[in-house]
Structures are given as structure tokens and as C-alpha cells.
Length: 92
Image 1: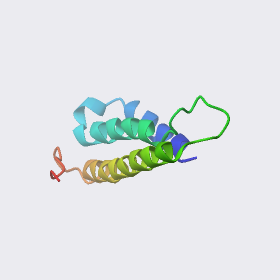
Image 2: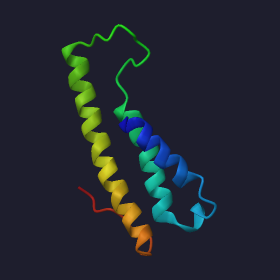
Image 3: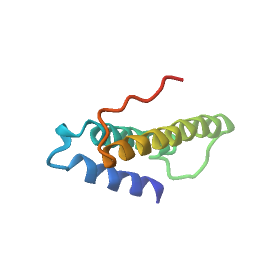
Image 4: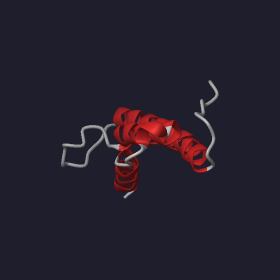
């Protein structure tokens, strides 16, 4: 699943021995960890599978935010891989 993939990549990044000397990679891992929270269904502990329209809309917005963060995390990953200095994303 997407959540498991994001969790796996975040664990790999955050377990890097030299993470503190690689600010772009560290930022990538932190964003991916935060993204996990936005991809989860609201009330994930519920097992009846029922959601109200307002819950679906709320979750849609959270997923949209989470996917935006994955895009930003990709740029941090690329900046690290290309050896760029610390990258600051543009403000929207």
C-alpha cells in the first residue's frame, strides 16, 4: 500500500548514519513521516467501513495535502542525490 511504501522509505532515510550531515535527506524523511498522518483514513480504528460525506471531504483534503508533501519530499531527495546544499522550497 502507499502508506507502507512511505513508511518504509521514511525508515530507511531516518536510519541513515549520516542523516545530520545531509539536511535535504533529513527534511525528506521528516516530510514523509508527516505524510503518513495525512494518508490515513479518519477514525482508522473504526472497522465498520462507514464514512459520512463530511468525513470523506475532510479525508480528501488531507490526502491532497499529503500528496503535495510527497512532491516536496521528492525535491529534497533529488537535492541530496545531486549533492546540492541545503534546499529551501519556495513559499506558496
